[in-house]
Image (cartoon, rainbow, N blue to C red; front, side, top):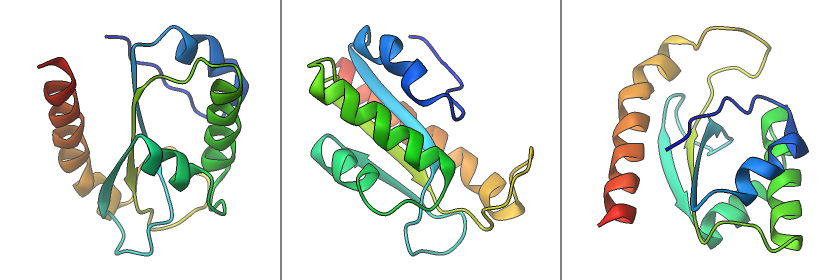
Length: 119
């Protein structure tokens, strides 16, 4: 298992994605939910979510890299987005209280996907 902070490097992630057997992305996303809400999107649901209107620079980069992976035939079959509803969209280095409180739920979602995919 490899962990990578993709930040906003966009297409620079393509080689990592092409080499992956599976992909889990954790990011902020507009879910039209309360701040800190966590939702998991797998496969085609992930593709649809990252293709929607963008609420942050992260989503734009993720949309670009996932489209490039699909076009190059290197998009992992097993892929998921664990999305957390942000409280604010301004730049910062620390999560807001609501997002920080959601981190254990996001970690549980990651563990659930890894367990499901490795059975």
